[in-house]
Amino acid sequence: MSLDKILDALVCVLNKCSIYLCRNKFDMPRPRLATVVQKPPRIKGFTPVGFYGDATKSIVMNIEEYEAIRLLDYEHLSQLKAAECMNVSRPTLTRIYERARLKIATALTEVLPVIIEGGTALFSEQWITCLKCEGVFNNPTKAEINGCVICGHSDLTTMGGEQ
Amino acid sequence: MIAAIPVESASENAAISMRFARSGFFCILNRATGDMQFVENEFASSKQGAGKGVFNWLTGELGVTQFMGHELGMKLQHLATEKKVQLIILPTNLTALSGLFGLMKLQRISYL
Image 1 (tube, chains in turn yellow, brown):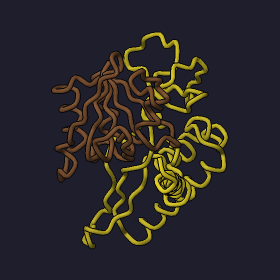
Image 2 (cartoon, helix red, strand yellow):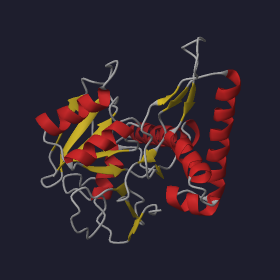
Image 3 (tube, chains in turn yellow, orange):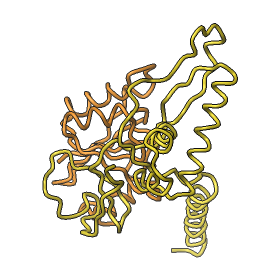
């Protein structure tokens, strides 16, 4: 093999490496981790009584924001306990809660409908996390689990907690 | 056990799609044999009901019993719970299909 061909191959490999690094470290933000929601909302949203405004405008509230309001304001849980239930840290729960309150205040003040949708929530009490690969899975058949369904590792933990 | 993984193209090095029902393709993986095939998602650009349509298509026609993805929507989770389909949320640092195969230690991906 000539020196030119070796150099070409080397340049090709370096290009691929740089593309991979750029894509993973700079172009894409880290995806949000999934939160655990004990009770999903029974409706898709709320509309103000006597609403004759612009139907295209609405406030979109995530499922986890709804859950934060439910746990803190309806169930009267402490922030620490609610954070444990949702499988997030206490500061993260505070940020979610502040976003939710701001959206509710905006909807009330500006007379806008509230749509509850989106977010990265998991609806179940049977979610299991692998401590090695950080994969999360459920167990719908209630069968005995000996290891992670992705990597097979046996260090597993249950996500969230029952109230 | 047959798993469905949403991917953005039909190759073993394809990026795993962030969205499940709206992904361009699915990798249908037989986890017992390591065989896989790529199918185009016909519900990717449907106006509504993509989650339900994809669920019925994958579980009915293709016999899928595991859904793998980074995000799985509320409707899909409800349907999966009803039909006893296992849901697997992939680690967030996993971006490519080849990385997932390496994690699963599949025999046919011996070059990884």
